[in-house]
Image 1 (cartoon, rainbow, N blue to C red):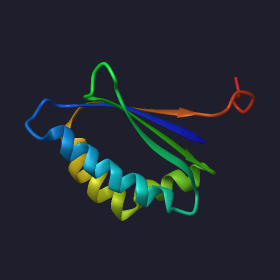
Image 2 (cartoon, rainbow, N blue to C red; image 1 turned 90 degrees about the horizontal axis):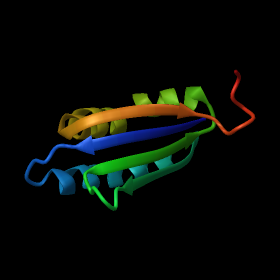
Image 3 (cartoon, rainbow, N blue to C red; image 1 turned 90 degrees about the vertical axis):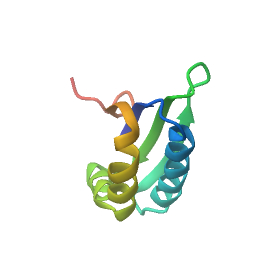
Image 4 (cartoon, rainbow, N blue to C red; image 1 turned 180 degrees about the vertical axis):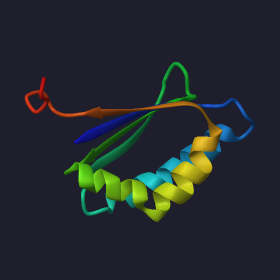
Length: 100
């Protein structure tokens, strides 16, 4: 199961450095989770406030465990989300695994 998070952070002084530093920490901790197959942070080239997180987990249960982790609750929900202007989480699956 793949999750793509599209987000844009607010134009607050220091917000870019703060958000990216927290996401680097979250990415490293997430990649160490047993069910995480990949976690990459992408930053927009035309709009550096635009972020895309590409997360892949073996199963929905692994994603649920990720969302319950200390690093997710403390850093993502506690520190990153308050600095975001918008956030959308897309649940995706490889073609052929999507039921109509």
